[in-house]
Amino acid sequence: MSISSSFYTGLSGLDTSSTAMQVIGDNIANLQTTGFKGSSVLFEDVLGAALSGVTGSNQTGAGAKVSTVDGNFTQGSLETTDVTTDIAINGKGFYAVKDANSSEVYYTRAGHFVFDNQGYYVDPNGYRVQGYLYDTTGTTLIENLVDLQINQSSMIAPKTTSAVQMGLNLDASDATGVFNINNPSGTSSYSATTNIYDSLGQSHTIQVFFTKTAAQTWRWSAVIDGSDVQGGAPGVYQLYGTGVLNFNTSGALTTVMPVNFYTGAITFADGITPPATTIEYTGTTQYGSASATENISQNGFAAGTVSGITINGDGNIVANYTNGVNRNYARLALADFPNLNGLVRKGQNLYQSTTKSGDPLYNKPGVGGMGSISSSMLEESNVDMAAEFIRMIITQRGYQANSKVISTTDDMLSQLINIR
Image (cartoon, rainbow, N blue to C red):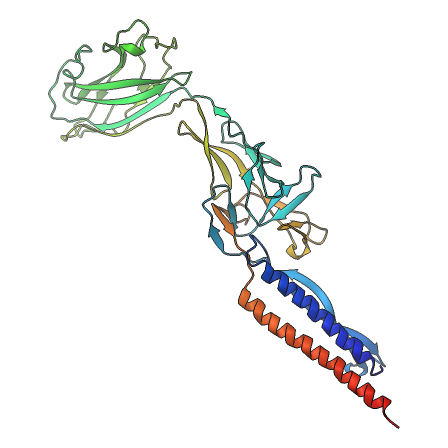
């Protein structure tokens, strides 16, 4: 090879150094870009000529060229945003977003999403986040990948109370007596109050009085105010239900649970017949301590509208309703690939799959090795500024060295031309 070929060898070094500096500049420029993944350049040598044979002493190199520009897909740090629709992946996976116009699917680690005016969960480009929807009960996940859409003006139907639970202690030292509905407080030892809901979601207040009738035996009497009963009068109680509680000599309840809560014969003021409700006193005791309520619960609720949206670690999008009900609405999908470096950068924090990356492998957060979801957080760029500056210095020196090869070759040619 002639001496002039050194020009092209040095030029190849300048080209590779320029590409390396371009990648470093891109990394540094995206230090604050959410979900950005830095890149690094790999070089390879160029064989200029094999003079004879295959031994190293007979082969001359012709410089270098860029082999690949690989992405660094390590996770970046997570920052808190206090925006409930912002999410970050803690671990492996990408969000899948679809362009509604072209049906093209892209992949990203940038979780700055919002709900648009149609209720779709979208990225800043308006691309719709992909996931799975739950059925109307919020318990069964429908395994079809779809655009996530939530109607935040929707109303959840009321649920009729079918079961009530009370846990309390009744004072074993109380005197026996006979319950009188016209004087409930004066003829009982203790009372507790609960609300139940009818088929319209209307709330009705029921007060339960407890009267000791014999050793280890108590009668409970549930009453409702007459203002909430057809034909009733305000301030005049009507019987809602009654029953007996039996205890052993250790104070433990022996009556089999649950029992019917509604045993009366009334109609609510709104024209609805009281639901067939049971009550359970499991855990109730009769000890020689002051009567006290330990817990009260019932399974009905009124109608409600969406008051807020939360996203949990499993990627479930949970609708919070004004009636206190929380219901799973959808679950995010995450994608992974056999070869991450086969993904193609499309700008705007998006990647696209190729034949080199392999087909996307979809799963749910926390399942199949996928990462979990951190809500109200975003993933920061994974670029290490200190490392980039060091690479910049090395690249700059490499560029200077290749420039020196060119200038030295020029000097040698000048000397050759001046030979007389």
